[in-house]
Image (cartoon, rainbow, N blue to C red; front, side):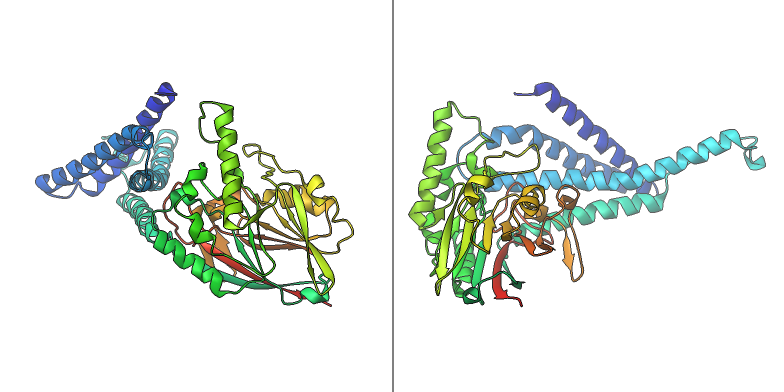
Length: 417
């Protein structure tokens, strides 16, 4: 097994975490009859042993060919248990810090007379033990329920006004899709429902902002005929995302990786999508023009690749007053677009998925991904430039969504005086 020492250290840390959580289980079951207490303890450790066994076997499961759906569900449940215990442990740690402070105070300050003939007994807080377990159980329940949301597509509609938009493009309707991740799909009927929702919008233009697959072009074998149904009078344009390069697969040779990428590009063509690889097209309406610029993946984050070349793609658009940029990673907007390309009025991105976990209510949205990306979901504006970050059509890793649903974006442009 690769990285075996790290793997065993990780398992050891999991068992330590399980033992730590068990101390809270002991606290809240202390008042139960012996038999009931024993049943609770046996159930807890049985679940622990089962989850650890699954973690040990996961690399074997995922090394086998074929659909990964069942394996992804198992992974999600095991990962959910881990994060639930981790969240619960934060409450237990708070309690332990309280006990440490109390013990230190007892050592430094004059001793309480009631304790002069005895030892200081610092018991765990039943309240914090219950609070931690309830918080952990709540997180696990949310992750379990979120599996039902993976095909619950939502339409996000917005109108965007720009002073430099040619008047003939007033009312232009764009549908943006992003992060399809076909390798995660297991339900073609559900996917087709999402595609039908796009068709019903009757867009003038369809723009796809990367990550068609998880890694392999073959993931689209079953799904390309469905996505080929997407048509628009002004065309369907697409770009690549970080997953489309299959950098996360160990290939036997560089030639295999190149062949996979060429096959992926052919899939775009087969669907009737024009793949923009560091290039642009000019679309015309009533003798006015706008530019559609598409670049390969470019990220300001060091762990993601920089295949994109906006300078090359932009060349020739200098005289066009209004351009739309397709750039998979939203960190590109702040890092390069705002400063150097003021005529790029609208940038469309994806990539973050909103981490597939968080909440959004009017006036407030939160997801852990916001601590990594300044722009991670929805609309952002600075002066005359705008960025829209699509939450993703598909999913990857965790086979579900909690609070951040899969998205189809409908954008209507209008000329702003």
